[in-house]
Amino acid sequence: MNNNKPVNILAIETSCDETAAAVTRNGLKVLSSIVSSQIDWHQEFGGVVPEIASRKHLEHINPVMEKALETAEIEAENLDAVAVTYGPGLVGALLVGISAAKALAYSLHKPLIAVNHIAGHIYASYITNKNLQSPLICLTVSGGHTDLLYFEDLNNYKILGRTRDDAAGEAFDKIARYLELGYPGGPLIEKQAQKGDPEAIDFPRAVFKEDDTYDFSFSGLKTAVINYVHQRKQKNEEINISDIAASFQQCVIDMLMANVCKAVKNYEVNDIILSGGVAANQSLRKQLTAKMKEFGINVNFPDLKYCTDNAAMIGAAAYYQYVDEDFAEFDLNPEPKLSL
Ligand code: KG4
Ligand code: ZN
Image (tube, rainbow, N blue to C red; front, side, top):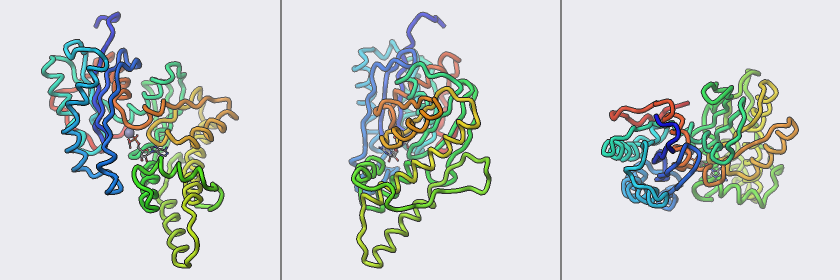
């Protein structure tokens, strides 16, 4: 491998409801990042409909890839590799991206790189802050995963905790649907919460029997919100959606922060990374930043456009696999339940 030659990677991401392609140079320089959202198609169903997601990916994948190359002002022949998310995600949705990536890589005689979507979310933080220092704690919170990780260095990590039921973003989406606010729930709950009192309702924070766990649980909170609304309706009492949203959001934030606080007390930590779609939440960003300041630790989050699903983060992660010559075979299959 010629170490001085820049490495241009076209990355593809179709694990859920965004059709995305990006060109990255040497991992962290984003030459283009195109995201075609399907939100309008799924909104009326209150969540992602897998069949619709696959069909829309099929419609959009080629134009999105072409736009990514055009914006980056790069010819396909000048790419060094093609990277693609191969899990976790919806099987039919992943399949569209994987098929497109295989076809392009094969026709160009370039390597194919299979990227774990969760690793992508983690690398998204490095696009925004290139000087992150290990050891680090990473909290990845999105619609499909809630993972607390400890990185001794980038190649050496362990999973401290993860959700035992719903993911944090999934909880936002389910409560938003229950409150008839729409989809995706995170930004809509956040907007309502701005008008409400986070202390209005004392929803329960999950507690585990074991002291030494860093796991999360959000399904009890979801049930508590539903019961609260149900009981008030039965008694014909007023339902203040903003107070419910603010109290629910605060409860999620408190549970996330509790485990991060526990981790920084037990581990040596230089930096904290907050990543995934829920990292777009301004209250979570502010409160975690303020709390970690007490420990003298910086909290880093990706730019908003790299918090939710995008392909630039896949290209960033793929570069390090390219350097290690960690290439995929052309019989690559989606792995919907892939974990880190
Ligand atoms: O990372 P992402 O785009 O997709 C997955 O990998 O799941 O995350 C989407 C999730 C959704 O559940 C969405 O409701 C949540 O992130 N989300 C938010 C916010 N923006 C997106 N949750 C809370 N506050 C937000 N501002
Ligand atoms: Zn994601």
